[in-house]
Image (cartoon, rainbow, N blue to C red; front, side):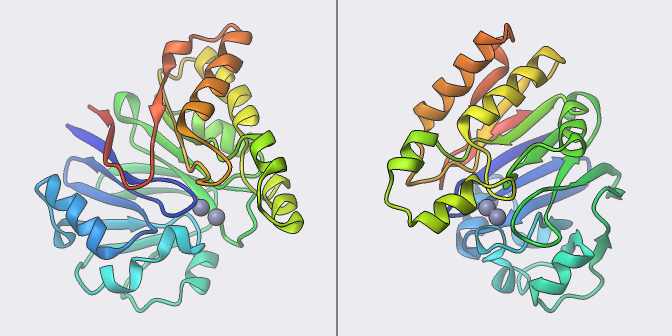
Length: 256
Ligand SMILES: [Zn+2]
Ligand SMILES: [Zn+2]
């Protein structure tokens, strides 16, 4: 028995909880400790119940709650060695790895892959096996073979659909920031996400959720429609696209 619940997702903050057996793994902590505690309370949990906090990379939209949260929990920090160097947190016994290594967290098999993103040590994760397997892949400028392998090995996938290309190009961001987002070390567009989602669904992924939408350069319905149209164009089963994880909305992505 287990689940993954998204607490918040988007360019403003990211956090969710993967539960399987005795493992209660918080995936990123890029919001406030108060909000994470409130989400945990909705699930009948509190920060002391967390066993691990797995961090993808050290951008503030993934780690901002850590300093306060770590005072309220004995959970073990899990992240790449490089990420830990930049985290600047005081924690005993962190579980550090090199991107690409496989781990076991409280009996849950966790796979990792380096992500092409403008942040050293950045990685993505998959958790669990079979029905309960879930890949969480956001903050990826491009989908590398390693990242695709991690996603295609999971029954359930959370994948970034960061921006609509036209909204970004015509939007208010300065030129340099637009270039950064569009680079292979930036964020995945709705169009690029659509191609990957089509391949995943054709390969048998049955539950695809879009995540890490830009508040300025995307809308949930725009992302959903663009990705589902791409899937249809490529003959992929559109029903595999289940929804969008949104900012400051708790959403049960997976129950098993
Ligand atoms: Zn991010
Ligand atoms: Zn980032």
